[in-house]
Image (cartoon, rainbow, N blue to C red):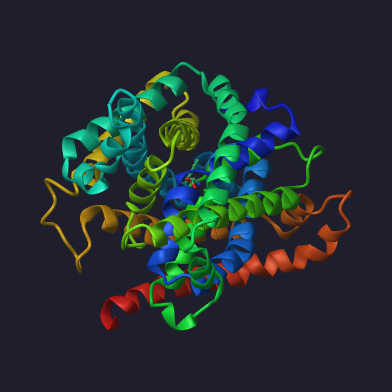
Length: 456
Ligand code: TRP
């Protein structure tokens, strides 16, 4: 990720924002969340919320960064002092969430690394498809040390890249691989949609049956919107501080990033579900969905091993890019808070602290196996508490910072753009969405989840 001064053109700004939004959240998390919440109706709810709640908050976060020119901690303090309102603490919440998320994210990145190495090893086996068909996430989940080690390797690579200041180069590298990744996804999509199960999948995904929604669905949709658009973490605040108003219009940028991210998520479900429906009775509701379904499907094809290897390599690089975004946010905040701290020291300290938290999700299927709440293991509780609980609260914090910390004039000036006439008409809608709709949806989502604990 570039430092503030090296941020040059508009195109790279887009790549940065899209690169942070698109990651494991789209390809791994979204499909099983859709499965867990019954398909079509949830998908509809999700798309609606992404385009309303998600986009509104995305614009607000970019705005806060652009207005203050600093990362979320310093930004919330700055507007707190300016407006004389006690809102600085919300910045801290975002930074803590970023750190805990990176710990969890690293474990899943570790899974990707594991599959990547398995694909490589299968090249040296006499029967590679038989070898690949034995892979299972359940086995991996039961091996806490292996998960911890893989997550540590991933985290170490991220820390080294940040410490060495290689972010720019690595990012350019990864973005140049994006077309390859896109091509692989399209090929897979065609292969997947030509399976016999496709009509059933289309009915499942596009025929909304609202009776399938439950107490948690709204909260799950809100949480995932925030997770996938990287909202509530302060990342978009940092990106906003790189932003140049003369080059681009903030709301347009927010709209485009939201649309692209949502489209990729829909492609992901269209890709995974036909395969999942046609292979055994794969549960669609489990974090293992992508990992159980894809390699086995690929191993039945000639050339599938090479294809799978490239796919998991691209997936890991995209996830690495997201991890760098998270670690950079934490490091940048730490350095702004403690200017005497060197970047390398700040990144290493953050890495170590995150590694410690990694222990919980990594050992959830082994050491902490007996820890269960309503049949859910520690890793699922971790995911749910973080993404469906804390993250929306951090989002609410952002709404409070932007509505109380900035004046009406500041917001208006940042929103309007002389080249965009529509910004005049859109502004009042955005403002009321930020003030009323976003908080109401977040609070309702949280409330329904709590009620669900008692009534479901
Ligand atoms: N949005 C990313 C994904 O879908 C995950 C993510 C959350 C992220 N917060 C972030 C990435 C902050 C970069 C920076 O996978």
